[in-house]
Structure formats: structure tokens, C-alpha cells
Picture (cartoon, rainbow, N blue to C red):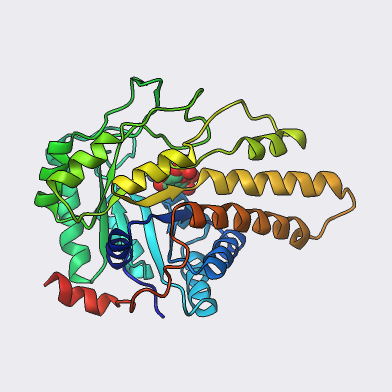
Length: 330
Ligand code: G3H
Ligand code: 13P
Ligand code: ZN
């Protein structure tokens, strides 16, 4: 089957009350590890590339690696999604490459640093929706800015999503999915202790606008064991905590459908490479340690596909094409 639109995959996740992981990719081993996990667990999957990933892969490589994933896994619905697009131009670029879904992160200006106001966010998001929907491509928006909450106290940088604004935002822009800020943050250093996420925001948004899939960024769990492997074999990562799987499962019950994971894959690969090279001092064949990294990605992603409830759902529906979506949007 060709790459499928995000909208269909998330609408189906609403029907089945499960979550779908969106895994960041930059190279062949990550894609192969994720696709092996999807194939074995029969899970639909979202593979997503950031602007950094587009640059790293010189764009053509990500396009053809995704095509290889499709060819190799004809029974798995695969979405190719742009993560944190910063402008209409970047979204256009991804769509030209064949992405079936784009995120326009209008919560920040084009520099990806300065927060925007509500009106600016609505303006850029609407522009992208108008462009993408004509081509059948799905759009994810974001409202609120990510940050950490520890013991219920927000850090300075957090702007949690206001549910009333979220409802207005969805109506004004027509986005297919909305990323909420509920207290998570990107990267390995999220929390110092078990976090309390603002999960009630999810219920409030679902109450106001049922049927719109919600997205949780910064969802890596940062497993202690992965940090320990990295540090055992020469790494120097500080003690940290991620988002516990029980919190993600609770978020899914309440209406989160897309769960963004990058850091856990990075940690898994780094630990595997460090371990392999430390234990095999004579090795200089990259297939040995990149193979170990691929295996580690497979293991961590397989666990998430089971934990998020994605497993077993690959064959639930007949995949839609972008042509089908063009008609649906009209
Ligand atoms: O949300 C950001 C993702 O973790 C991508 O990170 O820009 O380093 O590729 P990156
Ligand atoms: P993590 O850093 O928690 O993996 O989050 C990734 C993410 O949100 C990508 O958009
Ligand atoms: Zn993100």
C-alpha cells in the first residue's frame, strides 16, 4: 500500500481507543528497527522527520528510505510526517518529497524559538491547512509551548494549552490533529521526580471538540536501564526521568492519539553502540555496531507499540490515498 494520510490513521485510533507512536527517524537503521517492530506487532506507524532530519539526509535519502519501508512492508499503514515544520515553505518542501502529513508548529515563530500569539499561530496554520488539504495531505498544529512540570509546579518556560483557545483554534484552522502542551518537554532531561501531567486539559478539549485527534510531544519515557547502559560503557548522562508509561496510557484513554518519541530511540542506539564497541575492541565493521543499534530501536519501539495499544490494528481498515483525501476535504 502507498504511504497513508495521518488523518485516517488517527481517526481509526479514535475508533479503537488506542495511540499511535510517531517515531523520529534520520537513517536506515532507525527505519528498519521501527518497521520490524511494526511488522511483528501488526501496527500502523508514523515515521516522522524533523527539519534537522531533512538536512541530515539531504532530503532524497529520507524520501527513498520511506519508499523502501513501504515496499518492504506492504501490509502496514505507514504515515510519513514532517515534525515541527516552521513555515509554509518547509511544509511545501516536505509535501513535494511525498510526505502524507505535515506539522506546522505555529506556537513558535519561524526561528523555532520565539513564541507567537494566538492570531499569528492561527494565520500560519490556516495557510498550511489550505495548501495541504488541496493536495490531500494531513496537517498537525500546536497550541501552547512545551515545558516541564514537577510536583505540579510549572517551569518558567511552560505555556500549557488553554482548552477554550484549543477549541477555537481547531475551528478556525481546520487542522486534522492538535498538539497540546500538558507539561512534557523535548529531550532526555524532562523531570527530576515522577511528573504530574496536566491530563485534564485533554478531557476539556475532547469535551469541547470531540473527534479531533490530540497529540502529545515530548513523550519519551527515558528508561533508567537505557541511561545505565550508556553510562556503564563510558557515557556521562545525568540522572533524569521521562514520561512514565502509565501517564501515556492514561493520556491515551482521555484522547491522545499521536505520541511523539525521539529521545528513547536515540538513547537505545547510543547505548547499543557504546556497549558493542566496548565489548568488541577488534570490531571495525559498522554493520556490527549499527546492527546492534537497529536491534535496540526494534526492542524499544516494539514495547511501545504494545503499551500504546497500537499492536494488532494494521489490518483494521482499507488505506486511503491522498486522492481519496482530496475528495474527502472537498
Ligand atoms: O521535536 C524534536 C525532535 O526531537 C527532533 O529533534 O531537531 O534534533 O532532529 P531534531
Ligand atoms: P522526546 O524528546 O520526548 O522523544 O519527544 C520527541 C518529540 O516530541 C518530537 O516532536
Ligand atoms: Zn515535538
